[in-house]
Amino acid sequence: MSNLTPEEQVLMTRATMSILDSWKLETDEMRTVLGLPEEFRARSFQKFRSHDVFPDEPGVARRADYVLRIAGALRTSYPANPLIGERWLRRKHRRFGRTPLSLLLEEGEQGLIVVLAELDCTFSWDQSGSLRS
Image 1 (cartoon, one colour):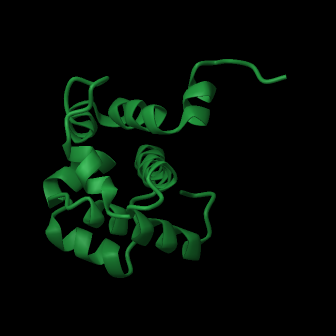
Image 2: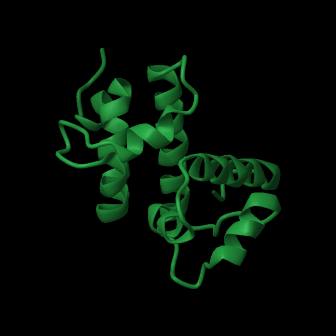
């Protein structure tokens, strides 16, 4: 997040929190998805919603970016239903053999990558190492 201005950091933090809230995640689930340590409790998340920014750590910034990109891909995939995110995350996915949310919670950053790759073919293409001409 260090390459973002302070204003951009606040906007990114608030946008990420808004998405996590729309997915109806509990505080522990949010902490896990973002890769934050146990010391971040409900009060910390209230501050993230209003004025604090996520810690300036590359892992947290990457995970927040994945959350934003997953939400964007869900909006693109389901433009007529803005509330699909929570439902899609909690429904067993045929390719995963479990819910996408369980991947996010159990597999950490790799789970975010797998879910994003499923939703966003351009991300999946980039991850495959394929070269563009």
